Image (tube, rainbow, N blue to C red):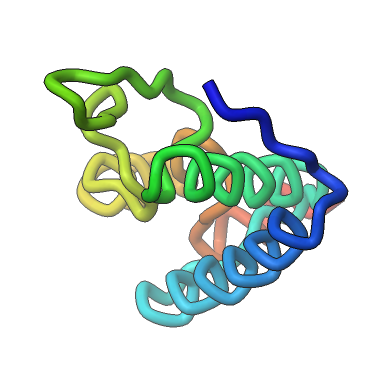
Length: 111
């Protein structure tokens, strides 16, 4: 497997693209970021890493496997994933990874 240098210009550029992507997701769905910045940073870095390694922003909380020459994750979780949109955020207030939350959830869990 290819190694990713987390201080490389390529990775840092992908992190910036991923930050813009996650902000667009928040705007599109009316979500907000988790009030815990460490959660957001970790998820953004994981999404950026997966984009560079596998070509898609697979959820960093689930294993990515290769099947028949193609990569996929558990439940095919590509951000923003279907389980988060349909179930996790409406029912629990946040996605499994924790980066995307309802405004109510974020206000209640403000640090």
